[in-house]
Image (tube, rainbow, N blue to C red; front, side):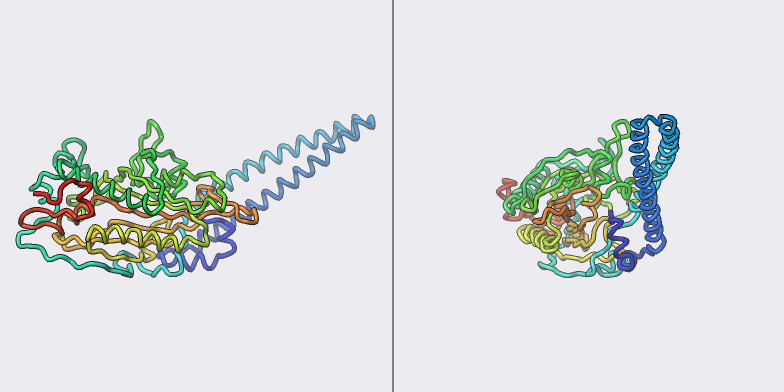
Length: 423
């Protein structure tokens, strides 16, 4: 959430940068500033009434001491009127604060200056690519056909148990899944991340803290009886560890990694792009999260991108890095890089990671702050990235590494799987 003071001090910049998201923010920005002025005026009136009440209370005390009870009682009637006025103003102030908060919740993060303008993923900027697209043998199969041929993943059984988008991993498919999770966690721990096993359900405050609410409420699974949400990503519970926390400068950066299943309704998804592992309602992901000093956050973003590049290099997958345009940028992000791997059998690029700097947008909601060397309290910057999301990694590994004899396992995974070929 943007700070009102930031909007006031950078009004034109906010409006101009939000144009990169194809948003005309003039009206809502003016409404926010007008409400904020009204809030300040109401607070000034309240402060004035409080000062007057305190002054009258002193006068009443002095009058009683002087034996002037009648005059003192007259003033007491005035304090009753002031109290009524104060209560009315407090109610008005609460309504103003609520209206202001609802408006602020509607405004997405301001894109970084290097975010390209654009309307969709077609306008994203490719900034890096690595590896060669493999040439498959004649008769090569898609990953969903390979999963069936080698009895690795049963999509139909998942439909029977739950519904579409909830696959069942079996045998070597389950071993490969577990191997990837452990490999990703081990690599993150080697890079200085502390492993976290968070809850898989969050309360409303956590959803608002990282920006999933109210923006993506319809995409989350909600349990009404308990007023809890299934997590869409480990980012949410891990980042919320630091909600309402004041850190010391020497505690930064904080680096956490967590593996969790993720749950997303994916409402409105249909067609060929949802086949097999391409788009699921439940999937596994390893997430890296950093809480960083504002001066260091963009170097940290580059470091996190390099970390994910290293994982893809070790897996031997061809990949590319895209800088997201304003129209494709997530609601809470100031700058995002997407990592995409090439799926040879499908002949398409599949997103496997988004790595984002949210600057102070989440921290302002979370009230996650630090005290600098001068004792001044500031908001931290938060960052996160997938390292990595498993479904499309598995899809690409199966498709790209298939041979007439079977599916080769990347060398780096063999110590984790216990086999080097799926036959």
